[in-house]
Image (cartoon, rainbow, N blue to C red):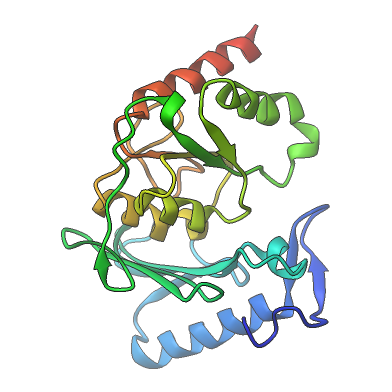
Length: 246
């Protein structure tokens, strides 16, 4: 990533505003070759070359070669690689690497979460007014402005600040590290959130879907927080949903 960052890389379109670069594809191809050599019986679910869209039985590596491709393609240094090893759809090991900051976030289920080998924990903020939140927008946001930006506005009116970084994996890592207090986003894929969700869990945080139900990496939406502000975040989301329903 760093070798190609800031250079004239080829960019293709997967949707109106959904980009993929030649670097995304090259990294995933290299990763798949490595897994095929070391663990030929394992499955791989990657952003650029597909895999099982539903959680498969057994061992599956869930991989995003570049999370934050739009940032990467535009020369913004906020992107990472995200990896999780799932067993029957539940992440057991995770690693997210941010090469521009040389930060490696790792976790093992039941073993804690770490930043460059040092333990990390979620924040201790108690209220939304004390909290800095983060979110992302789906690629079809142009057709859903009232829904997506409306909810953003609801949180802006309740929190100390709301950020939009452009990488769901980094968003989750920053909640796990206590840099941010909560994260919400919908219409995500497993490769965006599987690794980061395990980091939040092992750092002492709370995860759910928008309805407050159990988190699943295949569930398409996530609320992640330090736990203390989780009920308040769900309340804001539910209130906005009622407003949209009229």
